[in-house]
Length: 200
Ligand code: HEM
Image (cartoon, rainbow, N blue to C red; front, side, top):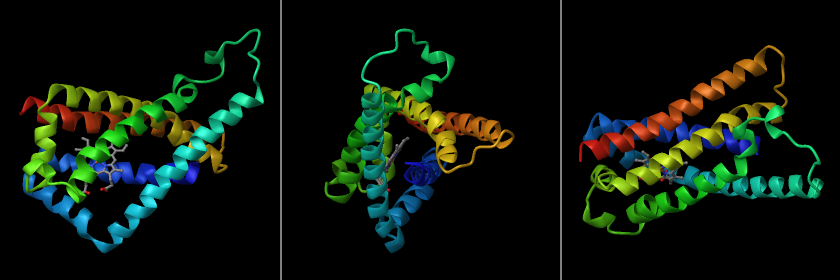
């Protein structure tokens, strides 16, 4: 889970960097997007990415089911907030929300760009701008980005812990870094959606 999680974090960071270009320059974004869609190495990496998502999802569901079956009866006295944060307790829920978003997102972008007629547009930028022009589309996306941020808040530090990086000095630092990172991701993606909605 940790390895696939860190791999997906790398992808999401790169994806955000490229998408931020939509707020700066149509040509720069289209060029970067075209490079990602045609570069042979990236084409191979798309299969690795798909496998990464799949393994991460299957292992996440498996882990949740195992945790549940390890203690089928509820505690007589339970105060989960005393020893775990909201992000950590809601991983399966935020993960599922991100998965629903991903299906919608891949249908509208990936499938449309690869196999469709791109809703009649001849470049990625026009598709992005048109979709975010619809208020409900922007709203669904922003809610998904908040869910993704909450998921990453726990996921970031958990990945390091799973790989054995547990240290009294560095773990608090990794947790802080994770908190900053998840805000950058949620706010960065949301800014793009809201920017195009406002300017539509
Ligand atoms: C403002 C937000 C976003 C925009 C504008 C956006 C835009 C795009 C575009 C244009 C593509 C097609 C790229 C191509 O094949 O040429 C794409 C693909 C993809 N996006 Fe996003 N995206 C956003 C957020 C996200 C988020 C948050 C995730 C993950 C949680 C994500 C995951 C993916 C995946 C897995 C693909 C397919 C792989 C690929 O083609 O590289 N996207 N996105």
